[in-house]
Image (cartoon, rainbow, N blue to C red; front, side):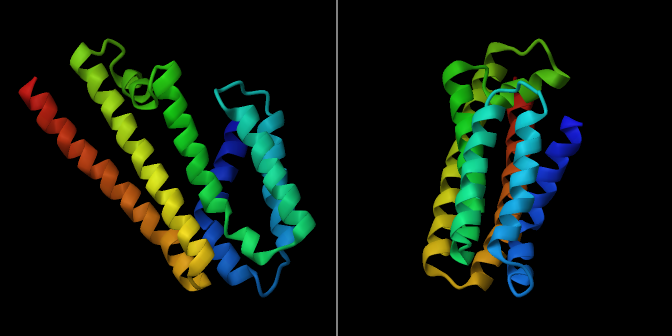
Length: 181
């Protein structure tokens, strides 16, 4: 059940900018708040005890409550900022309390990582932190000062393209690092 809720939140996050852009003429912001709130409530109640699940769900539910109360179309545009800040928090906290997120992912395929690989995964986690910080700042700037079409283009397409480039770039760097090791 928790995987289904997680998939629902992922899908909602991906289509969210387009849903806002095309849906504002048909739906009120409080209706978006109900849908997002239901997904985050299900996530919070799913019983899965991963780091950050409860505090993220609580914070997101607070955002949904405020969105529902104020019924503001401008407030709808802050959700991608919130999502990037969640990711920044997860990656950043993993650097402090360990193991870093990228190390955890690397250990899924190679449980016995070398010291060089552990340092490398820490650096990659730091790069992702910078990416999420930059993404949140750009999304916030677009929320405050850009037309909805620019906000939609960046948050619905460009930011995912940049993530893909970062994935691909990191994969290329990893191949070079492995070749030298």
